[in-house]
Length: 77
Image (cartoon, rainbow, N blue to C red; front, side):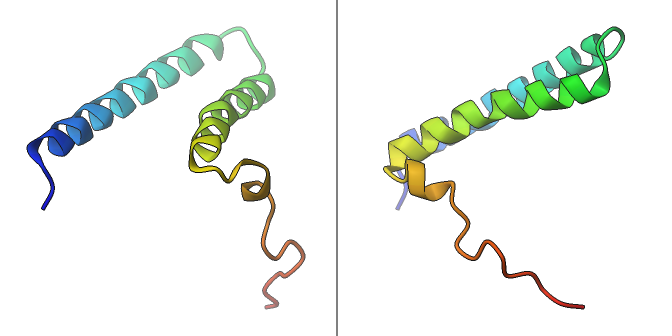
């Protein structure tokens, strides 16, 4: 059974995620007034790779986790 500490940690992480998403949304809204949308999308995606790569390094699956398991297998309609 999960301990009380893990519940508190889960709540804290959820609140942190909500705060960070709100901050990102506010930053994009403010930047959209002066910066082209393509540039905003590029930097938002580039910065999102940092925590993803750090998480993959923490799991020990960094270089291999970025590769697709079946890169050229597309469903046919």
